[in-house]
Image (cartoon, rainbow, N blue to C red):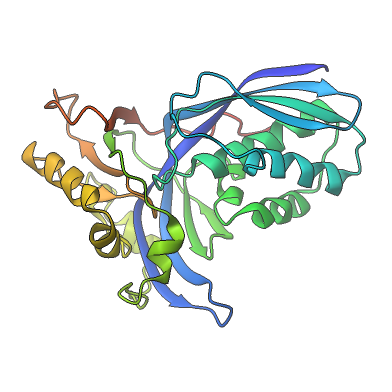
Length: 284
């Protein structure tokens, strides 16, 4: 195999995000449901035999300049080291998922890179070792290897697959981004939410599943980034109940039907999305 093209890397939405505590090493303990949606980056891989790894940007819709040593390159190098392969790769990235949005775009790119390169290089790490490589890249990366929607706990490493009803959403990413570190450093962040259960979440599955819980990061994010509040107000003006996803500035709301939306500020990214039945690379 000399190349693999058109590899998808889907975004996720956090249906809720509770912070239930903090470890002695400073890492926050969370509970969340991660849901895959059909807003995707696309990656292309061409084999190199000289061991070098490179990445180039192709039609960057997200508009943010990517660092040379991004998660994709780090993922390729981590797999190269873990597998002992002498092969390399040229990676092309069509970036569509916005950065600092809380949608996991970089983590999803890294996970899709790990899965594609195992095929391209003809290597296959044991599942536990691949998960360890993924966790070393970032807390969200193992989720994108799990194959579908999931109940996520711990620092992101405890993943329980779940099923979700099909639904439509509108996702709003204002122009301003929001770095994760700024939220988690805040003294105002609530860190003692009551522990929830999968059973409690599932009890809301009869049409109310997307109203379960809350996002503990949202109040801090609104204080740090007024555009988060403006985006939520824009959704509320259209009689939609919005919520922040993850730890970035994007917000979302479930669409009861494919309704028309009012015009939003021109520098915002607005997209109607559907949730996925499974990760497009499930089984790779």
